[in-house]
Image (cartoon, rainbow, N blue to C red; front, side, top):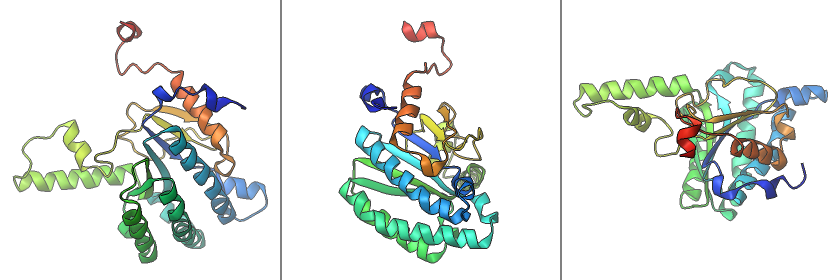
Length: 246
């Protein structure tokens, strides 16, 4: 995969890349380790992906870090994930500042432990003025939760008279991703071909890229491969090839 970066057309980058980071547990089990070892090892893949996206000029990168369904995992694994989240955010904030990257979150973050909430708020506030790229962590997130919440808020605003008409753009404004461009490229690692309740509204026209690579082994070359695949596709948005060429 040498030289893949040089093949990328920087004028045709996806503005927003979303990643389902899958395979930490299987990677650890293959090495005879606990699943938590896989989560810890996945931090390097996060760091490399974030830095590579910023270097290329991607505007938004959303990482599916913890779903609402993940709360059903064994308690010790959840505790380890939360501790890892706190320590990683604390240690990586300096790097985010150095690289001019802003941190944001989507999801039910109020359900996270108070220490996680404090670390997140501090990092979000510290990086708020950064402009090179926005890193979005999806935490305690699921798309059905997000859409249900949006419907409740829209209903309340209709009842109060605050909202008169509902359109696609109205719904988008009530989602956690309000103000962000929709992802144009969705990457999932570990060989699974599922969306797993992630950004269902937002990825309506995203290009999907599935790789067998387990997340702890994901490196910048794999990111470049996904971007090149995206750039090699014809994005028609309901039109014909002839209409696009015309």
